[in-house]
Image 1 (cartoon, rainbow, N blue to C red):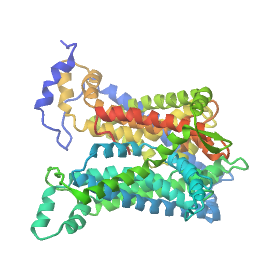
Image 2 (image 1 turned 90 degrees about the horizontal axis):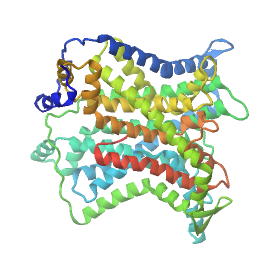
Image 3 (image 1 turned 30 degrees about the vertical axis):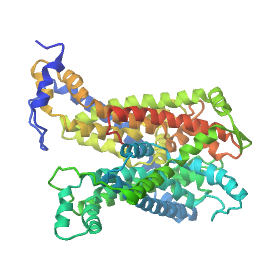
Image 4 (image 1 turned 180 degrees about the vertical axis):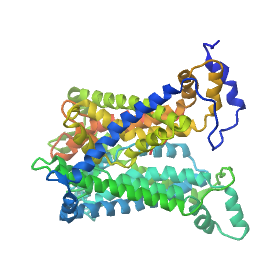
Length: 577
């Protein structure tokens, strides 16, 4: 007779079962195989219609001219000087900023992973916080600080100090902002890699006479190559597809995401076919970058046979002070934008000019005029997050446990497609797919929820998949052996065991949805305005209410960091990608 407390009858097995083998475990057939098959087919239909279909419409638009198949749009795109300049600028900025982000973050990660320094957990928390901070926030703050009429620029000139540049606005500003916006991502990947390197390799190197620096360059650094290559790839692609930063701080510098945006939504004239061709170019670059990253990782093997963790080395004196100072500078510059927006939100602004008069009027005006914007942002992200978690749990279970010959691999591939789709490209595909026809979603809140769901489904799914691989399938079989149906075993056994991954993955997904800009700017309409749109539009308009925009930015930061703090305290492994 089935028990009402199924969990109590299965929990003792958790302590006795060995970790699952890497090969598939043979299990007895489910008594209701059709239930999960129907779920799999339903998910396949849902994801194909929301992810695959819009991209097919994008491809069709790009290869269509005068009603027939043609390469004319691509020929025009590659032969137009402004698009050529945009492609070149985007590639150069992505590579340069990615290299600089690695140059900044890798030494910091090595120092914290190798030496026993005070404030370790604090630095790791700051790094985690920085990974969910939107880059356009940094662009907005650095313009306030070092623009032509910026706070610091004006004050230094009043003191007779001239900066080596008139304004941070321009290509250099894009590089500067994106370096500090992405270095934390590289830092966390490199830190985990350095901590995981077998310390016996250092000992073996020392035993044959190698000095510390030679060991670091010939042993430690090469062993961390997978993390460093992945960090460079992820940071450079984040920079390449960034939409808000070039618009805010680029000063008109042609960049590929902004060129596609203007071509699709220009107030003067629009050309969806050229914009679609440009979107496919962006997607092609992302695919090539991913292929290069995979090729670089497959060239050599980086595995070790030991599971020992590296002991932290004691450090004292000047060396210790320099290390802490370096970490302080790295994370201090990463969080300068946060300090700037907090400070400016508490000062008076008159016609876009800062007055050094403390005030809370910015917050009063914010909640009087934009309370519904805050609530709308949280509501849209919350709905998308719930949908994302539900679908991610089911997809992860189907790909890890059920493994249908065709459906499971198809679900795995489709859920990873948005990983390489820039937000601008995704938005154009959704507009083309749902802007006409039987199902019109443009201009509604539904299309924003759909965009957020699609953008973050890969990250949440992979987080849950990783946790599922550590749950032995025999636990679920034991539940069914005492009378539980497959769905009940899934709900009461499997889901509770992967709850930390569900909560942490869902939380990070929610935070990234709240701060999403590129897709939101292209898809939103009144009254479905979000916090990121308010900040972005105010940052782009001269003499706009910068104080209110700063106050809105502070609210956005609180909406991001407070949930992250509590989830990190409960599940200390929360990181972002």
